[in-house]
Image (cartoon, rainbow, N blue to C red; front, side):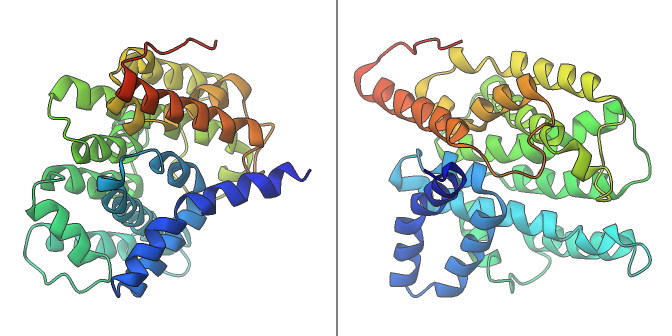
Length: 284
């Protein structure tokens, strides 16, 4: 069996229903944006499938928004072509849309603004995601700066998913953000050799120091103690644990079937716990 092919197929199957619904509702352009995000970020796409169907469409819109913010950095990585100003301009456009100063003319913008205006996701949460990408363009690069960027970027994305699920407790939302930051740290460690020449804001320290910071984020999240709906909101923690335990030997490779099945196990377990109030089984 080609495990890499099975692994990739799993990611695309998870969103087929959502993409089909968008197309049926004559939102093909939006569906195409979501498909691009799924291809760029199959880890989070897989994790989002375990959310209730009532919020899954909105979650994929957020994933596409997150992907669009990262794409905004692309010109900045080639200083010879554009430099950071191009990234700032694209990010400022999204900031002005969210603040109501600009018409939502991007394909994603009306769907994103609908989530904000309905109160499903807080405006400030989306603005923090924009701010995290702006921080990545800044010259200052130290551990404190990097950790804040990770909390406001990968972390705040998971917080937004929690908000979709109706989580309002600030302490719990901070734990979800810590879990998202742990995933960001784990992914950076996993792909460290390839990221070194990418122009991205790498952790300003050694790989071992990055591992320890990632484990600190994991402790702050305390995934196993979260209620089931919150575990669903931060399923990338499952991958963070595995990445932080391994290192960078899988740099550039697609997720193996073991990683995918670990996410599926945790997602199914959280779903069963929601229905039957089952206490999670520790597997480590």
